Image (cartoon, rainbow, N blue to C red; front, top):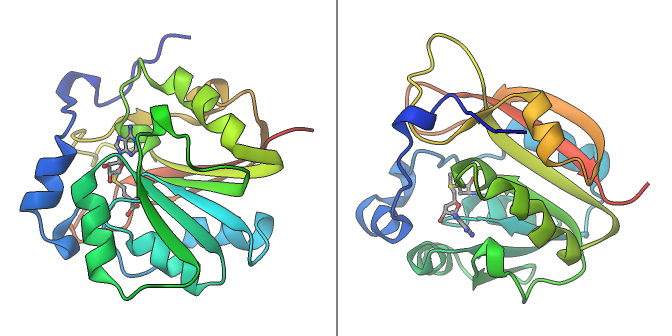
Length: 208
Ligand SMILES: C[S@@+](CC[C@H](N)C(=O)[O-])C[C@H]1O[C@@H](n2cnc3c(N)ncnc32)[C@H](O)[C@@H]1O
């Protein structure tokens, strides 16, 4: 399946080090002090408290902290050293939380997690990378483990179309087809800006 996403023509792959060096934490476009309602819904339904959860592409770590406060054991990883430095400097140490600098395509130190939460990493990868994404992350997930993946959705006329790629439910299901689809939840990507892009959160399971 050839992936053509709504933002393909305008896509810019940010230099993540620069983003995290130049933008303050609370002005990052995805920053929010709460967990998004769709992520909470997926966690509450499919991931028991105290599960080991990999927050993949955790950025400045706000969501990792919120999930740790909820009772999950969290490993937050990000390709950007600046992001992980911001995550480590912004919060007091938390016994249920650790941060690592790691590229998802070379993730070796995260092992046997009960669940993976990806809020906005998948949709910043290039369409050429997304098919190898699933091969890379699957070995790190336990059998019967859960993937919660939140992406910008192909959406309305209001959408300015810049930034991350947009995916339809059919595209996401196709790319993620090595996993069993459990649920799709429509929502929004909350953040400090006025416009909150439409999102799609897929919940999937490894194994039957
Ligand atoms: C839209 S931000 C989302 C941050 C965080 N998940 C949140 O919701 O607050 C996308 C994040 O993915 C990270 N990222 C991009 N490519 C990555 C890769 N190949 N491996 C790991 N992280 C990556 C970026 O550095 C950035 O922090």
